[in-house]
Amino acid sequence: MITGLSKLGLALFTICAFFTCLQIGFSQDEVTEREYVYAEDNQQCLKCHGHKTYYFYNEGVGHEVKERMNPYFVIDSAEFYQSNHWNFSCTDCHSMDYRNFPHAGELRMEVKAVCMDCHGGDDTYAKYHFEGVDEEFIKSVHSTKHSEDFTCWMCHNPHSYKINARNNTNVKQTIIYDNNICLSCHADINKYQLISDKINPNVLVKHEWLPNQALHFANVRCIECHAERNDSILVSHNIQTKDKAVKQCVECHSQNSLLMASLYRFQVKESRNKLGFFNASVLSESYIIGANRNYYLNVISIVIFGLVFAGVLFHGILRILKK
Image (cartoon, rainbow, N blue to C red):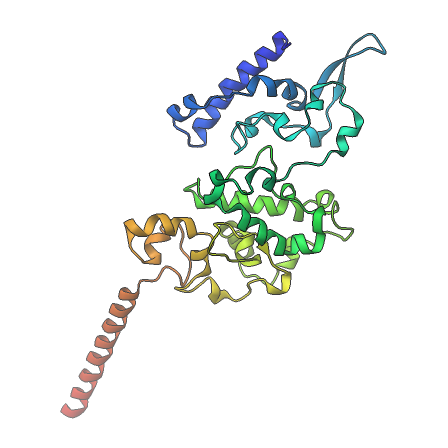
């Protein structure tokens, strides 16, 4: 049974989720249409795992006690109900045995579900090319170097992950979101050493060669330079070894900028029917030296320069002849 406090928590969650969804871009109709079918069931888990502390009746001492929740097991309910898994029940991924408290110790050893357990071979998700993503990931340095120790969840938290690249028109927010995924490991020694005994390399030191470091970090994603591009999937998952990282400026700062096939790929696909085929039109939110060039403006500029030069030359010749 859900206690009065749990019902109050569920009511507060519903209100918070409503306004949070409005803030992140859902219309009021979209929020109203969402049916939180499993909200009541999930609240049984979140009344403990949604807080830094929890209460339980301790039969040994004969009264209710308050304990601290392991911080790695705390789930932000607002983030969960904004995520792509918002309409899941906790027990869709976790054993039904977790409904019992205290949880049996051996449950910690159960095999965790991965993306392909649900998304593999399902026509409903065919347009997202999960099979292609999985194939790319298997070829990546993350998989080849760490094998089964490195799973989808090392990068994508199942309780908060949400598709960003094709759902967010604000490119800067996509950059921050995606880069934070990389930094959640490469800037966190505790997580990094779950799969490696090495010292986590300092990201800033490793990128000392990069001019205007802060500017680059704020305007491109790590995967632009560290992942192999693939035309069949939106976000590349084949992370390359460091010796294959992009280091030539011209690869981004040119009319054939690789950013058009990676960071701005979705915008390109959506915008070209409306704005034409010029990078300057597609890259309306960003200025990238060398990429925001218009061929015809270049031609016009050269013609004007040529005319000016010809005029000066002609004027000089006339003065010489006159003299």
